[in-house]
Amino acid sequence: MGSDTKHPDTPHVQRSVRADTLEQIEPSYAAEFVPRPFSLTPAELGGLPATLASEPTSVRAWVRYPAIARHVQALALAWTPRAVYVEWEDSGTHRVWVWAPAVERAAPAPPTAPPRPSVDMLSVRSAEPLVELVKARLARSGAEFVTSTERPAGPFGVVVFGSIDQHHVRLELSADPTTNTCVVQLFDLTAKKVLVERVAAPTFQEAIEAYAWAEAIDALTLSGEPDHELP
Image 1 (tube, rainbow, N blue to C red):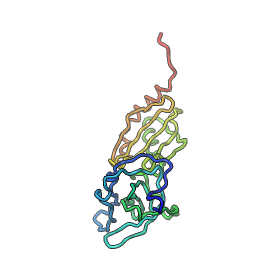
Image 2 (image 1 turned 180 degrees about the vertical axis):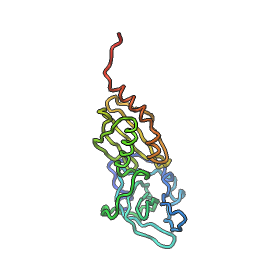
Image 3 (image 1 turned 90 degrees about the vertical axis):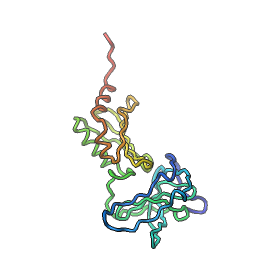
Image 4 (image 1 turned 120 degrees about the horizontal axis):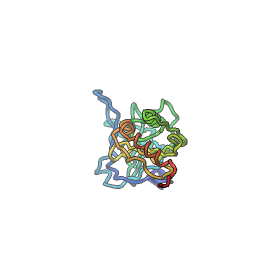
């Protein structure tokens, strides 16, 4: 990606994982036959660690198919000194490893289609649909979550600051690309502690549904009560 570097600029690096744990992802075409793009093999990746981008970087990448090569507008999610893990949209989400010289930085593509739903995706691009699921789940326990601000936590997560019945909390939603699991956790900002053990599941719906919200609300209420002296 240029003469001086093979990967995007990253002022804030989230973490590193083994490159071969970031696998190829393709849309589900059911019984329809659709040619799949090629992704570099574990042997080609060479067992190198991959740096996860703090935020996805807009790139143009050459991607090889069985009979053709396509120049796609994509996002760089991770990279090694020799390869880049890219994602692009074409009748669904694709993720593959390509050689670093096949990738160059590019301006973000203008929006040409409605944004894809984030709930079932590994990358959390928008917290809104996930927060709505959390609100619906909390409402069943008689509580309300009010959003204050949100910010990305790398390409695979988001942190939402807000309150539950006037108790300040931090909602953490993240996906682990090495295990393909979605994680939900709630943090009490006043007591500075995790309210309930985090829950990991194949989808965010399952993780949000399985999270012990009633137990978290009880812990939050207790942490916000004034101290009482023993008689």
